[in-house]
Image (tube, rainbow, N blue to C red; front, side, top):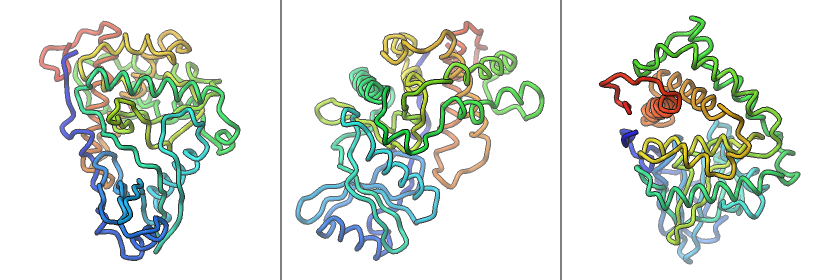
Length: 334
């Protein structure tokens, strides 16, 4: 696989309000909780929502990571979910800790410990990828037998998510849904894609551990010491941790790295059944390619392009694994 990059880098996908653009009541409410006026705000550039997210430094030198969105919106609901999940994470999970939540002037806000780090770039630096995989291995081990507070939140099962959201090839193959935009080499593989995808719920059923369910490159921060931290815990579910390992490695494959070897060597892959990785790649490719055709998103102008790119990379990795011939001229030929 040759290196292929998305049109918009992961660290620059978000269009968020800056600190000065927040309503006066929101800013004063946050400053009251912080205990001092804000002197500096560094807005997060990654992500695919329009919610406020920034590292704030007060006049006393205190630093905090604050997220905020109008109450009652999907973004505010996601922040609230992140807060309750983060508060229940075991100490061994390398994640920022929750400080407080609150409302001000009709907005909902959460405050987390700040992580002095950066979103990894593409292509992956192998040392930073190793750090991210090590952080995920530590988190997955800590969540293999989760503390009671996490299941008590009513987490969905990944097997159910796979059956409902990662099942796009089956109606396409049965001519019940339109063909999504996809590389030409894969169009003759619809029946195989549908068959693989249909096995994913069975491959993931019965898992009792907790997994992140959204482990992307931009949900990782690498600090100056080279340690990786995992962010944005709002989509957690019960399911096998190898699902997130594979999802993260889609960008490793796009970086020209040995994604198969990295997956096989990761501790979470020990529980992956045969052909489970292929089934997941088929499901992810269908999900991303179908959603990429839904038209412009008000969440981020970069969202559809990233979905298209992620779907094509997933298909290319699957094609290589299964020995499919890839036509000359395909953007992701190998």
